[in-house]
Structure formats: C-alpha cells, structure tokens
Image (cartoon, rainbow over all chains, first blue to last red):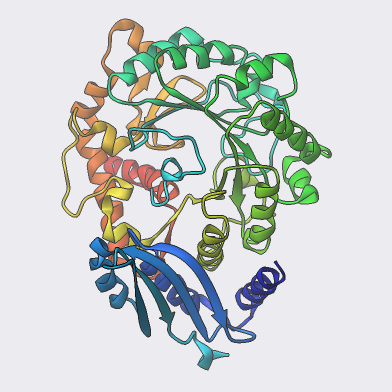
Length: 108
Length: 355
C-alpha cells in the first residue's frame, strides 16, 4: 500500500514537472498506446527517475498466438523488450517487460 | 471504442457486441443548472417532455435495425414523468437500459422501482465535494449524490461515474478513481468537456488541452492496471495510433464506404433523440442537415433510416472519411476526442455545402 502511494506520488511529480512538455508527453503516451494495443494484457507500470521519469517500464502478458504484437511494440520507440515464456512443458503465454526510452531529459 | 465498457468483466455480462445505442433526451428539465451542461438543461424547462408512446414506437423501429441499448439522458432522466413506462417497454423489447443521472433524486419509492429496470446507472461527478458543488451550482449536491449512490448499492445496481474532464482534472484523477472504487462503482468514464451548451458561456471552464489529455491517458494506463477487474476506466477519447491501427473504432475505413441498410448500425452506432424528438446520428449536437427526422414521423409510416441513407448517406460517409483523413495526416495532436470533432465538423461540412 505504501509502495503504491509512493509510486503514485512519483507519477504525479513527473506529470506536474515544468519540464514535461507536449513532446515528452506525446512520446510517453505513444509508447503506452503501442504497449497496450490488442491482446497485450497490462500488469504493471513503473517509473525510475526523479523528478521526471528517465525510464518507464511496462510489464504485461500476451498469448503465444499473439506474437505479432511484438512487431507492433518494436515499431514504437522502445528501448528493449524482455520476454519470459510461461507454461510447462510448452509456453502458452509470454510475459514481456518493455523499457520505454529516456524521457526528454535534455530539455529539463 | 477502445476499452469498450461492455468488454470488461467488472461490468454486466452483455452479449452481442458491438453495442448499438439509442440515446434519448426526453426532457431538458433538471433539478440542477450545471455550469458545463452541454444541453443547457435546467429547472426552466418544466412540463416540456416527449410522449412516451412516440419513444416506444421509435425503440421498436430502431430495434429492427439492431439498436438494442437504450441510454436515457437529459435533463435529469428521473424528472421524466414516464421514465418507468419507457424503461419497462424497453425491457419488453429485450433492450438493455442505461441512464446518465446526477444521482440526487434516487431515494423515492418511484426512483427505487425505476432503478430495478436499469442495467447500468452512470452518475456524474465533477471532483471532490467543493469542486462538484461549485460546478453543479448547488451546495449539498455532492452529499445528495452520495446518498443516491447508497440507494444504488442497496438495490444491487451496476453503476459507474462519469467525469467531465476540464484542464485540471488530471490532477485529481487518482483520487477520483479511489472515490469511485470506494463507493463500489464498476465504471469510471472520463469525458472531455465540450465547448457547447452552457460551457461556452463560462470562461472559468476550460476544455482540456492536448497536454491535459495526454496526462489523463498516462494516468488511465496506470489506473487500469491498479483496478484491473474491479473498476473499468473508460476514456471518451482515443489515441491517434489506435484510430490509425483500427479505423473501425471510429466507424471509419481506409477507403470511403457507402452507407447501406446493412452497415448502417455499424457505422452510425448511436441514434440520438433530442428533447424535440429530432433524431440525429452518432452523437448529440450534430448539424441539423444530418437530422434523420422526428420520432413523430414514424406515426405517418416514414422509414427515417432508409430516407437518411438515400438522401444523406453519401454526405455522412464523406464527413466521417474526411475527418479520419484529417486525423491521419495531422500528427500534431495524438489525443482525439472523436465525437466532439465529428460534431464540430458536421457544422463545418454543412457550411461548406451551403457555400
């Protein structure tokens, strides 16, 4: 609970920061839009960086039959996608952690 | 739309997507005079109400085209004297019934009876108590709304909250979701303020900027995972990328299409009946040029949908395709309040045609 509050306070600090301009927001929401497109079930979002997020991470799951979504994710400005297969003996879904690139820190 | 409320497990299990809505504004009479009201409703419209017989006839007619969800707005729906009859007849047609209400008139025996004929109740909330009361122009409005929500809980209703997004709404979005969750709501719908109706006259109410909508979008991504399966977060605007990936989200296609009897429900999706009984496609506030007719026309046997397809179908499709193309080439704005844009452009389209 305390962690959630801390994370929410941090997110609000990020979004309130005068350095967060329209271009940064466009980049931020575009990455989220790509990562939440069809079939990718969002599980967790978190941020690193004070006062503005330097990195944004999105973790979610996708069915093994929805691998094409990865192509969509890679089209976006995404630094890396880490994938873990889930299911024994054969994977039935994948857990993916997406690292969204540095926010517009040079403008701060 | 992306994140359609009907797909979420925390809302009623409604089979047969996509939802095709008949949105009825049976009266502009309201117990409040909200500063942002898009239909300028208020206490001054006493006595002006649509005849329930005409509305039921229209529901039967529209059901034949696959429109199976009745959504009653207003004015305040609970001030419509024949609401119980309208909802009862609608359920007889096997429609789903929804209302958008300010939640202040739910404590009477009549209201409780009506609530049992509702599949989803959407209650407006503008923020915390002080903000809500200020925008509603009435001290105590927030408290009365909460008492109304308590009635919904007692009746075991599915209910949610609708919030009109203004420039600073994003600052309170997390608290608003906490409030909705704590009250037992299953839906939090975020609708951008439109510069129409009474909002136009109020310089203190600013429509949300692109920056604000981006922030709401980012916060919604976080809140969706926080309240997954418990509270559905619905945004009444779309990311441009989602529209370009799936033009069908906004009834558009990469190529211009013709309106036909078969695709009419998929493209139009919502039929709006305003307080005069006039029927409009898609959303409240469309230009008169696109009016399908009046619900009273059905008494004369007029097939208003067929007439619309024949006379205005090409113009309507051209309007949708034109707006879609404009969005496709303009990458400046990523947050797209589609309904507001299409309504605004319907007026421009008519002006251009006249010129």
